[in-house]
Amino acid sequence: MKLSVVVPMYNEEGIAHKFFERMEGVRSIFHERFGIERDKIEVIFVNDGSTDGTFNILKDLCEKHSGYVLLNLSRNHGHQITITAGIDLSKGDAVAVIDGDLQDPPETIADLYAKHLDGFDVVYAVRKKREGETFFKLLTAKMFYRLLKKLTNVNIPVDTGDFRIMSRRVVNVLMSMKERHRFIRGMISWIGFPQTGLEYERHERFSGETKYTLSKMIKFAFDGITSFSAVPLRLASYLGVFTAFIGFLYALEILRVKIFTDSIYKKVD
Image (cartoon, rainbow, N blue to C red; front, top):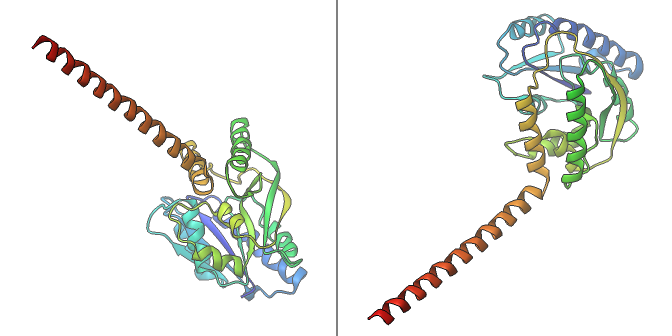
């Protein structure tokens, strides 16, 4: 298998058919540009416990068309676990990851692959333009990526998501890492090997609403910072030293009171 494309899906019944159509076009592009036959490309849909009709739509598509695989998770496990499950199932020499909401154009996968053939083990997509996102989302995203870059010990590229392509050796190392709280883009940066970026324009969602609520974004940021930064450990150490110092002062005060009180009693006697 030349290429695996991992596509996490959660409540995307309004997009699933359109995404499939775009991926069919991508498979044709790969044949034209790289001479790769359609049966050498597998598309792995990972249904993250959707509560709408997403599962049934994907199941029908995968049963009717070769080259498509459906992995159905028992419940909603979250974006990073969903991606991990799909990557673990992949067989391709190269593995691409792309969300199924069509904000990231599937056709860009071919450009990432071309760059990968130049000798890069990881080619990550860099967002030079983000359509259809609120000022608050753009501001918080910008702050998050730059804060993460300052706080972490890993050089995580700014303005990137999980949209990228990886070599099989990167995938093998990634799958050997058993972290429970996964921050995939950070883990891939930490792995090393030759990596580069490719700019693209991120589009507005084709349908539906973003699944990344504010609470999920905060948790995601927390996982990223705690996984790759020594700052939380330093803060915990400082807090421990401060607490011990306060305890020491309290012990001295108790000792002082006890000695002073005993002296008074002796004088009275």
